[in-house]
Length: 347
Length: 115
Image (cartoon, rainbow over all chains, first blue to last red; front, top):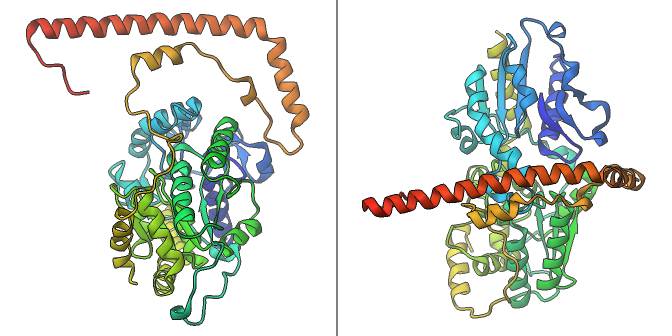
C-alpha cells in the first residue's frame, strides 16, 4: 500500500521492485495506492479496490509510508499483521514558501507517522536515521538493483596518469525541490567552473515540485552560470544511465535525505561523490564519498569537486570504496532482510 | 590523494580564495513563520498556472481545466473571500493575543519564553 503512486516516484519504483521479488518467491498479493498518477497505468490499483473480503486472515499488509495519507488510516484497523516501511518525509519548513500543498502533506505526514508506527506490528525505516525518527531500529534499505541501469564506463587503466577532462560534467540527480538545494549546487559548480574548468557543465536531473519552482531554478541557473547548466526531468532509465556514464563527479548539497538512492547509482557508475553529510547520507555513503560538514560552504564544495575530478588516485580509491558500498546494498542482501521480516510476520 | 585528506585540502584551497559570486536567490527553510508572513499567506491567491495536466499531450486537458476555473470564477471568488476573511480575522486575534501576553509578561517582569 502506498499513499501515492507516480511514474518518477522513488517509493513507487520501490514497491514495484518488491513486487518483482514477491513474484520470484512465488508470493501473491497486489499493489494499491490512495492517490494514483494516471501515467502509472494499471500497475497499481486504487486503494478502494482493496476490500476486507479480498484479504486472507494470514495475509500480511505492507505499508510504504511517504506522505500524509488519511485514506490509509483505515488499513490500521484491519486485523492482518502489518509491516510499515517509512521512506522519510521532508520537514515542511522546506516547502512553505514554494509549495504550500506539499508543506501541508509533509507536516501532517510527519505528525501522523508515530501513530502509524505504533499501530503496526513492525515499523522499519529505509535507513537507521529514518527508523530512529520513530524510535525503531529495524532497517530495510532501498532495494537497489543496478542491473537495470546498465554498465558503467571502463575505469582508466592507470590512475597515476589520469588527467582531468577539459569539459567535465558535474551531475546531480534528485527532485527539483527546495531541500535538495540545487541553488547551492549551481553556485558551487560556478565557482568550480571559474576557478578550474571554464568549459565544465552541470546537469541537474529531477522532476520539479511545481512549474514555478522549475522556472525559478532555470532563471537562477542562467543568472549564475549562463549556458552551462542543463535541467532535465522525465528521463528513461537508459537516458539516466547515459547521464551517469558521462558524469565526472556527483555533487549533492541536499539539506535533507532519508536514504539518497543516487549515491548508490553514482557508486555503480564509478562516479566520485561529494555530498553534504546530512540525514541518511553518511550511513549509505560510508567512507566512499567526500562528505561536507555543516561549516563547509559552496567554495569548499567547489574545491572538493576540483579534487574529485582531477586527482586520479582519489578517483580510483573512491571508485573502489563505492563498489564495496554497492556490495553492502546488494539487492539479494536487501531482499533477504525484507523476506525475513515478512516471513516472521506471516509465521 | 586519499579521500581522508581531500576535504582538508579542499578547505585550505577554499580559504585561499577571495572570489565570490554576486548575490542571488538562496533557498532557506521557513523556520518560524512571522505574523507578517502569515498575513501575506492568509490572503489566499492560488496561481491558475499551477492548474495543468501532467499527461503526455495534456494541453487540451490543461485548457479544459482552466476553462472550468473561468466558468466557476464567481463561486471560487466567493470561496476565496470567505476563506481569506476567516484567515485574516483569526490572525488578527492571534496577533492581539500575542501582544497581550507580551504586555502581561512585561508587567510581571517575566522573560518571554525562547522561540
